[in-house]
Length: 168
Image 1 (cartoon, rainbow, N blue to C red):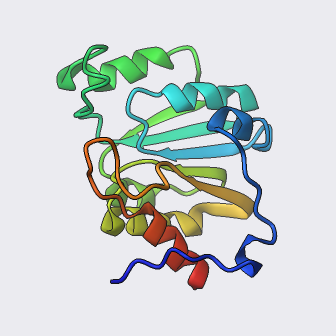
Image 2: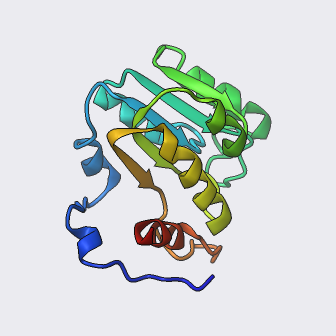
């Protein structure tokens, strides 16, 4: 599929741009339900606690392979690390498994869904498709790494996924 990178002005009429995720968090509705697909160490989820959420559901396979986090825990300790991090936050639920297996089992509506698992086109598109039925009216979907590739030149499909969604 050819990469379409142009987004029409009409598609941007209600868009808001934030300088970083710390600024964005200030605009997430308070006391909502949050779903984070791909949480790694739980760093972003910890920031999301500032929104005083009713719930945060974290979905991950908890098999760390990101070299930046392996100095905090190894693959075998990943789940325990995140579980311990949120042990005093009953609003946080860890859902261990692949997103395409876990998302169909969730039965609540989310005010904010953050997609940050596998960033290739196939997985990002599937995560978006499986997330849409879970999105509350007026809810927000966010993506991590809306870029073409990372520092290791691994090609991402997030831009293509978002542009295709906007076309539909």
